[in-house]
Image (cartoon, rainbow, N blue to C red; front, side, top):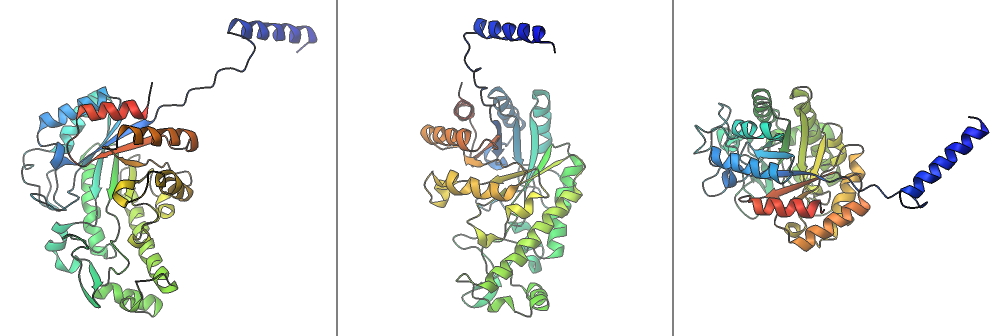
Length: 369
């Protein structure tokens, strides 16, 4: 560029800056809005096609872009049994009231014209149906010095053994069936874990670990941190991660895989975000600080930073309680905007019925005007 042309360009630039309101720095670019996802427990919110249409329409109006629908029952309780399906199939019984109502297809039918993505939420090893279908699959735990089927720590729960190849094959068959029959945008795994250190301690697991290490895991001191307990936990954690890799390989090409995980403090459950990260497209830590008895600050001092430190390039989408009060949502959003620019998605979980009023509230607070 010649000197004369350079001077002309400089003058033009200065005139342009003045006409735009002065010679100061250009205005800062506004932060991109958070992508919003809602997680829907089917028995609480989606009993009919009209329920589906109303919820999906409300989510679209309020700017939510993704809905994760419970396809396999997650919890046990009145009228619900973990492991039952909300879609037709032969690999597990269909939940009462859903024999003639395919909730996942109904959601896809409602979401596609509105531009929403749909993910199939598929809990894994918390499964009463499977535990009763084959009692040999039931999780064994050390309780009071004896090994027995695990029935929960505070309420009755049914786990199957994540270390059992037949258990994995059964759960994977359900995932593959859903992923190949439905044009979902992704699969979200849940309950892909143990419930404490002292499980699984079934005969096959004990024999396998003894052959590997020379130690019967039933003799480990599970009450305190020690080298043998850490080695045992690493053995279990690696098995969970390998199962996630199997799920990834079984999904159609291009279908996203994500996982809802407990925060890293819960080392006893055998989850490690770093080992999941290579196989998934979203890590969704359940940062339910109230449920876990933590102050709100724990979300940004522990739950998020500890997960993101393990995630590498894998996106982290914090999963939050949809019933948090306005001031807490505002604090969380402000902190994420200021200190966690890598977080681009907020996942909102409602245990009961979603309402459009709450969708609108969360959308407004997540992305204030």
